[in-house]
Image (cartoon, rainbow, N blue to C red; front, side):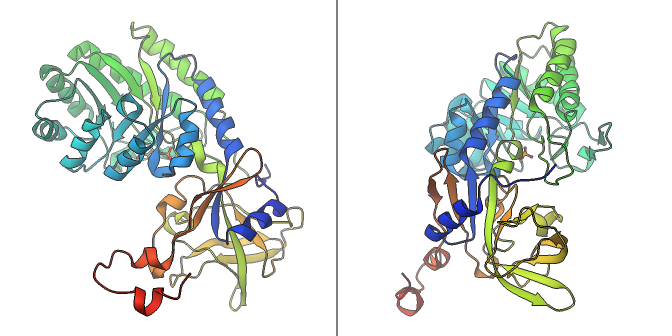
Length: 426
Ligand SMILES: *Cc1c(COP(=O)(O)O)cnc(C)c1O
């Protein structure tokens, strides 16, 4: 399938005239359409709730849009909890799915009424000591180990993942929690990442539903929700077939009826903690070509670099690139598209066939709406870019300004950058 930008070259030039490149641009209409579809796909489940994985796109303006569709926040750190609280997400609207958790963060989560999802059995003691007594409602994260396989060959490796409790541990945890007075239970697992198949959620659901039935039978725990977490992926590559969220919802319903329904557990709520699926396709990194270099290879240098989008450098991840205004020209030139870091992995594309590129062209790097800006960093003294929302009415709203040198130097308390270098900056 051809991947098309969600906006035009004219619109991007108009925005770039106001806000210099590089910037991440988000598509309000796309975010809304998708949030609506997710809600509809799981409307068969009375308690269904999506807890948006804040780490994917920690921007309050964007998460507020999802809140209109009933989404809560999935947080895993203190500042993510603070961000949720700042937009009014507290209590049952917050899932605290952390790991290697500092005790003080359990306290913060508890104080705002968040549902705590325990990553490890040892955290029962930590939580009890920290809070004085355990909350009435708790969730446990499960990791069955081994390899998670789907029929199309996609798999992931829970046995190598640091998260969650083993089967034996989760049974023991439920028994202990029950004994200590916990009244409502949840079960959570995240077993495969960025799955581009409608099979993942139903298959994961089956694992969780079956263990839920056993946990209830053996410990008497009152299981209130099952959290399928994240992992529903997006087609980064043009040859990938996008997930069909309606097929996924129907697939989960089928196992729900077969396993939970039959066991008399038809009142269990389904939760999700999607990040990538909610935002990934609805964000793009917009960057301008500033250099060309012809050496052992053909290089195109842009004004963004890996600090703006780390996935290609970190995972060798593919991000599709559209040369704006040249959508229909033949891809007959072989390029490496690079940023300016002093790191040879700072490449948005390696050996990519693209239309002939000139200095000044705008490149649209697709699918940066999740785990894009948020993974940014400051290596080489690079500054984080702006984030801009393309609203449904076609207007552009700055939802996070670009960092300035003053931001970068701000934490050197007591060292005066102002007199020497900042005074003359605007
Ligand atoms: C990262 C994460 C998610 C979101 O994952 P996606 O792949 O973006 O859907 C959900 N839950 C937890 C606990 C996570 O760590």
